[in-house]
Structures are given as C-alpha cells and as structure tokens.
Image (tube, rainbow, N blue to C red; front, top):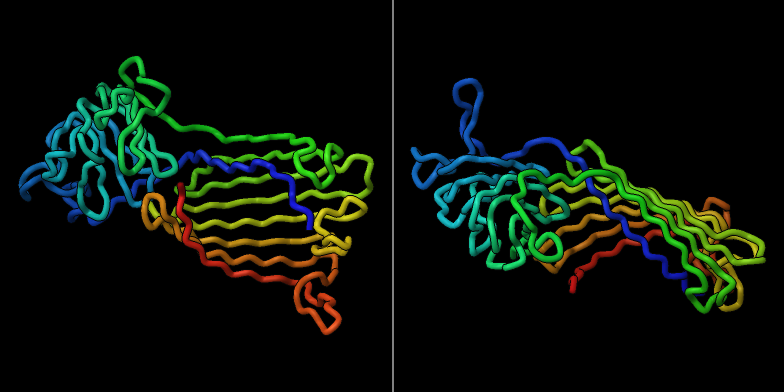
Length: 312
C-alpha cells in the first residue's frame, strides 16, 4: 500500500459553554441559597475576601478569583482557588501576588487576569497567566503590559491547507487539499467539527477524497468521549489504497465509524479505548476472511484497540 500524503489535521474547538456544577454543597439555606464549603472552622466563611470572577467551564469544577487569601481554610489558596468534590484547593505554589479579576478555561488550562505579577514565580507571567495543571506560566510571549479585568475564549475555527508533491507516491504530480473546522456549541463540554481531505493526481482519472464529522464530549476533567464518522471515495486510475501489485486494499466507497474513550491518568500519560467499524458501501469484499486462494471475503472490518500513551 502506498503511504498516504501527510496532511496536517488539527481539530481545535473553542466551545462557548454554559452551566454551573459544584460538588457536595451544603444544605439549602434561606431563599434556596447554598454555600460552597467553609473556612478553617464550620463557622468561618469559605473565602476570606471578595470574589471578582467565577468560571465553571470545566466539568464538575468551579474556579474562583478575587481578593481573598484563604479558601476553605487553605492559606496557600491566594486570589484564585478551585472548588471540586466538595473542597477548596490552591492552584500550585508559590501563590499569586495580587487579585484576580477574570478567569477563562480551555483544554485543561486555566487562564487568569488581574493585578498580580510574577505568577508562580515566573517573571514573564504578569497580569495575565495560565495554569497548565502543574505550574504557572505566561499566556503570551513575554509579560503583559497592564491590569487585566476581562477574559473570553470565543468563536469557531477554520483550517485549510494545500500540499503539493509531498510524498514519493506520485512525485510532483499530486496535490492534497484539506479544509476543516470546528464550531462552538451551547452544550457544556460538547465540541463539534468537520473536515474534507482531497488527493488530486494530475492528469489521472478517478478520485480520492474523504469527508468526516466529529463530536467530542468532555464528561469530567479527565474523561472525554469522542465519535467520528467518515466517508471515503477512492476509485479509478488514481486509486490510492492498493498493494504493490495494484490490487485494491479498500473498497471504492467506505463508511467508517469510530468511538473513543480517553482518560487522562497523569499529566503526560493518557489511556484510550477505541472501537472502529469500516463498512464497504460499494459491495466489494476487500478485507480479511481469506480463503485457501487468499481471496478476501468480508465487507466489514472491526478493530478494538487499547492504548497507553505518553506525551513528550
């Protein structure tokens, strides 16, 4: 089989999320209000200062920012804190040095803006900083130049690219086209995307292209669920999926469905369980089930894979 041209496919979704989720709240008080935890003792406030910003975009988590220097009795939870599982916790050490006025969340990272300097001891993290789960760092190149009082992650994303003569399969006689996009949704944790990938072999009959749709749901801070549906058209003289003898290794028309569950074990280690089903829409039998004469006999192919992945 020829190797497929390398086409950079990036699915980045910036969701507009809604909803507020908290763990183990106290019993409802007057007027239906509930408090999120307590301070060092049951009679002290959960936070010892004003709150200027709240963010609940991470499933099951609330981030609070303000002028407080203690959250849930934790003296290291200065100016920003995390409410999860019924308790308050700090975001790393050393603590921030000034009040937080804005919070945004995306892809497991917490962005904060305020009147602080040197977040987490980083000289470039002034006024605007990002918490990646283990340390604070600058959210842009170099320190920000002034107080930040608002943050927002907005919009949908569109990607497009053209690659010409990238592989040895057809030399400079081939061009790959890619366009993909993601859309924001109002459903908490849900992201949607689509893409079109086309391989054009110049002056050759036939066609090779695929179109796909994606859905990702961030169920918890560590667990995400992914669905992918794709349609492949590959036929004619330029048929791409063939072996060294020119025999087809894929039907001319294929429907593929993939379901993936991903769980982040640690910062750089993730686990994945994936189920994929490919179905021949053209009726061709090109997979598995070889008989004595090695003739494929199956119109369906199923794969189940479990992976442990380390991210460098």
